[in-house]
Image (cartoon, rainbow, N blue to C red; front, side, top):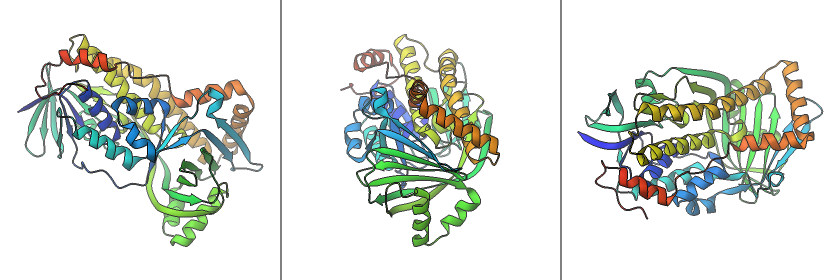
Length: 413
């Protein structure tokens, strides 16, 4: 029977950030995932400035930054009706150099993996959780490879099909938008000037996000029957359809990679915790791509839970106690619920055939564009609540003195 401080189910971006943060603070960590290799994907993520702070804290952003591109403004072009409506949202209006950075996910994942393997107090198990049982003092985890582990806390970071959520019998709300996202990389003849452009169409938004001077990633949402037909097109015809969808905002396009696709859904767990178990990232919530909220919301899950764990350890308390988990759930619900509702309503208003909804959405966009105070307020809300890592190096050293189960932890550098 192996004992540890924290077990993390899932070795995606959120799970690896969590593992690295806790390992840096001196906790003994086991990460469980049946597929530990870096996934092949052409998807990128718009990581906002607060998320970059987390990666800086871990010491890995300097290796990711050369592959990432600043996002200095968002332009929305509504083409659902005539005339078109345009609205620009520059970061300088908030006194910021950029909102964040568009980052290739395979680069981010690879660097987080490399960092995690440098910690002697992180172990990886390439298997599946078979059964969990929690009691007053620990959670017992049985693995498909017949190994058994006990821990103070289990963190579910195992995605939208979460095994831990299923074993914990946590109910789930789910909505299928009957849309499909197509993604890939394009090269273009005009410079994007670090502006992310989002074009709204009746079938869904089409977004070009900066990558280097004359390259961008695209996220193209379309009603699923139409998307499936588009995916069948020969490359030349697909590029022609892509060009039309881009409205020539960046000149002529050349398809560099893609398309890949995935279905668009929203889902949210009715609870974020179970006995000695906390859910984070897509195990807890899945949002549409509108507003680039997904990974940023997940990183706030990670940092909030990290803060709770570290605070409990510093006070000599049980890190898996229900009081710790309930505090985490209360804080996260205040952030997750309005963002899930906002992106859901915006998605519905965009693809719904009801003209009144379209008119209301277009009027709303005009108001936001024309009222500076409202525009700045919504930009700040889109960026997220203010947060930063509450526990710096000196705090982490204090925490380590209270972590008693780890015999393999190395000094924090």
